[in-house]
Amino acid sequence: MTLAASGITKRFGGLTALSQVSLELKPGEVHGLIGPNGSGKTTLLNLLSGYYRPDAGVIAIDDTPISDATVQRRAALGVARTFQKPRLLPTLSVLDNAMLGGWRDARAGFLATAFFLPQVKIDERELRSRAEELLHGVGLSHAIGRRANLLEHAEQRFLEIARGLALRPRFMLLDEPAGGLTPAEIEQLGAVIRVMRESGVGVLLVEHHTDFVFRISDRVTTLDVGVVIKHGTPDEVKRDPEVIRVYLGA
Amino acid sequence: MTYRWPATLIVMVALIALPWWSGDLYKLHLAALICAYWVLIGGLNLVVGYSGQLSIGHVGLLAIGAYCFAILAGTHGVHPAIAIVASGALCALCGLLLGLPSLRLPGFYFAMATLAFALIVTEITLAQGSLTGGGVGLPVPGLPAPFDTPRGTYWLILAIAALVTWLSWNVARHTWGRGLVAVRDSAVTAQAVGVPAFRAKLTVFVFSGFTAGVAGALFAVLQSYITPDTFVFDLGLFFFVCIIIGGRGHILGPAIGTIVLTALPEMVAPLAKLGNFFYGLLLLAVVLLVPEGIGRVVELLVERFRPLRGESHVVKPDLERLAKAIQDGQSK
Image (cartoon, rainbow over all chains, first blue to last red; front, side, top):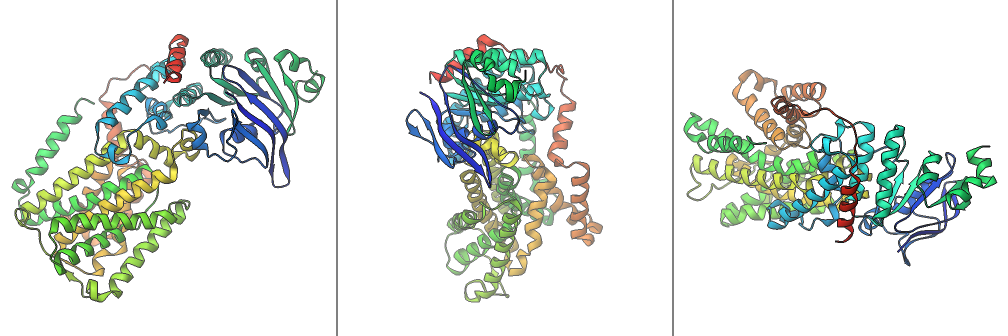
């Protein structure tokens, strides 16, 4: 079971953001995606999660093409993501934000919900316990009942991860999850990502903190101006002269 | 909240007993009118307050519901109970037909579409004289026993208002409510967790159409005679303003908004003279002072009386628990 992009080209007007890019995300691995600003990392993440359509190439889960599937459809197929700038629902509680991630597992329809049929209670109990366990797991026990607009930055990042995990994803796409975190918080983030990997989730890690990426990734892909310049194990990528030249510096 | 149920019970008892303590029939009529408005606003609240779609044209649906009831129950002698349900069904259908093309539009244009709809309905009621009585209007039959007295009418409308409150409460408090708030506050988040935004918006819009139709029928009964002038566009704005003043994402707030905005101008004579100026002033005050509305003010007051929990912001992952939670999810 893999989430794969092959030969992806994406243009915005006259600008070619990605050119012939391929990437494979397997369950139970952390795949780092690095590159200078504007190299197309977030564009690729948006293509994988369905916010953009590729101009050429195919995105597929296993051998089923999903290039034209909506974001919602991909969520249902097990693709979850977080955002560079956390996007939470500020007026809802932390628990409600995490429970939102379980939307697709709620079976009660609109009328069943309005008339409070038994299925609503079953859904609610299941989603609540799932969300609570995940919130305790990512370390937000202290904030479960709080309104999300009262959270500090690191809490927001971890809440987004909990919401993503509430989708029961097979693939988790993290868009600069370490941005704005302290070194201690980055360590905790690393531990959380390792747990996701060990539980069989495929994690795509788009990140600027290269030390962090090399430390926890199984494989790393480096982009520069929309082209893959190196793909391999962290050690291979770290030593690649081209990567050093365009990104890491001597 | 432990005192939610006792508080609800006390309010319910007070409302049911209203005919004995309200004093005169006019106040009872006013209370019935507020309840009829709430039947519409309670449904509209899911559209405006939860899914964030700014409909200012629900007065058009109210008019359709009212005329449907007057024509069925009056002209054709259909049983009023059936006529009320038919009014709701017709307006749900109108909501579907209006929502299908317009709910894809961004906020401002959607509001304009609903505005246009309300204006068209007024023109149709004027033009189709053989059906609606044109500018002269239509008499509206009363309800059958035991609802034919002012008290009986009030109790029926109160019961329907309570039902609408309960239905919208159920929607707002569960998965659907969270999905709607996501559609309102962050479209990309809604997508990312798999909420089908258009379908969700359309569903609550059709629901609000149904409650608007039922409200129209009840409103017509209370008016006992309807003309196109009964459904001035101001009324549509009034419904909208009740929700904004009450606070988006609340149910109690808009309910208080409806009561205050309907009752105050009637009870305090000087305010009635001010008319729309009063609504404008109140709206301005709320938007400037408490942009989140009355509902948020109530919430903050309630929080005052709760013991403060520690204000820790430290994230401490529990990795074993996390691993178990993720694996539980995957094995389902």
